Image 1: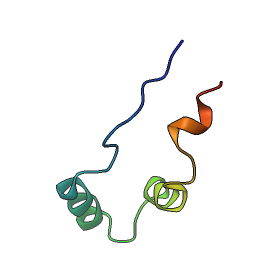
Image 2: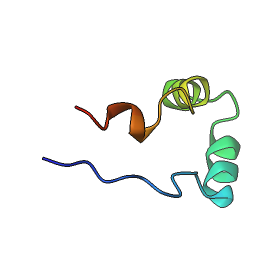
Image 3: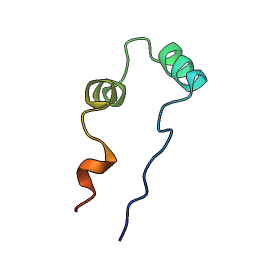
Image 4: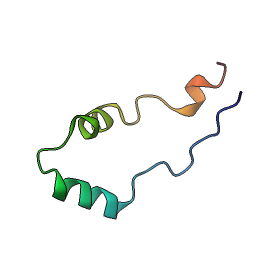
Amino acid sequence: MSVRSRSGSSIPELTVRVARASNPQGTTAMCIRDQLDGLWSDEDFAEW
């Protein structure tokens, strides 16, 4: 099994604006992504 690299994995600006507008306090998923974004990269798991 191989994992494809996620090039351009950023969230589109319109998606961010809609998510923040509909959830001004944020959600658990939004908080987790904000906290963990950039902590690991695809290359960190290449040997697996």
